[in-house]
Image (cartoon, rainbow, N blue to C red; front, side, top):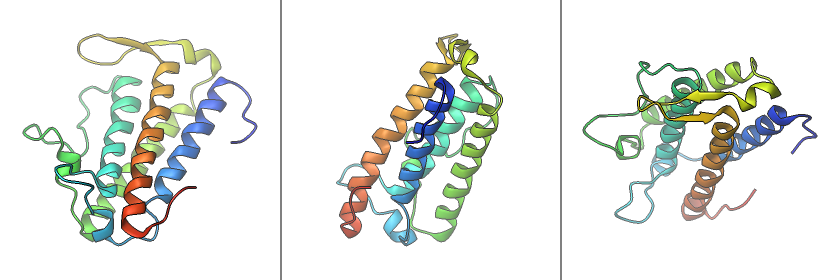
Length: 167
């Protein structure tokens, strides 16, 4: 980690490092390898995780923190709760679409974060149609937690594919 100064800088540093680690778990793999499933009956795969994290980035940064509740959610299907994983297949098109959407959502999140400061970390936001509230701080910590958990999943998936582990 860097010598981030301030609360927001610290959160951004951790979030950025986990995003990079997550991305590196997918480096140098074919579309087929990226779509390799974990143990049955799970549909967990690396490309599925990329799709899922695009969804998570959009859900928290666009919908929750910015109130864009009408914005379509990526990689969803109302008839399939796990569509982000179930529809992840080992094609170049699927992989390219997943990474493009994830990178787009990360860039959009970072653009919004560029407008924030340490004072805004305590701001309360209404984050869903049920009018639940949270602080910006709690949502950023949750995002770090999401990446930490899913990077661990990605590490195990990668080890099963080619034996590569760790950071």
